[in-house]
Image (cartoon, rainbow, N blue to C red; front, side, top):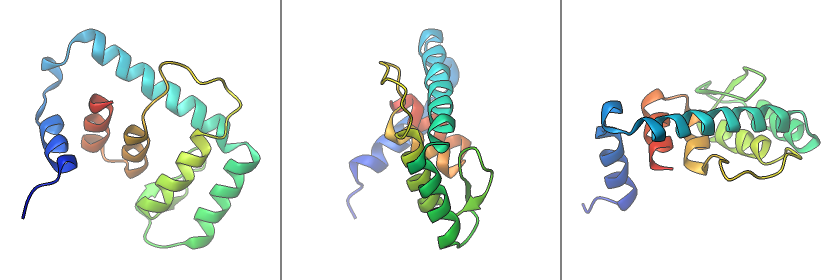
Length: 122
């Protein structure tokens, strides 16, 4: 079976070691994570954020990942959906350091390795 581009990219990024990433890049990733968390927490209090959180809780399922700002655990895909809604529901202006969708999904999965890889990939 032919390996997908996403799988190849994921393998490449997860094989990277922190020491191989320039300090300036590591600093930028930390800022992206803080930006994402701040925007997502603010967005979780918006009307659409509250609706997405209620929806995710109502669906139920295997508790794999946390919803932003509530700590409730739901299936990974549901958390990714609700957390993405929250992170896009804030009235905050879009900044040039806004975190990527890949980083949001990885944070939703709560996998440190996936999160590091996604944030490194941008």
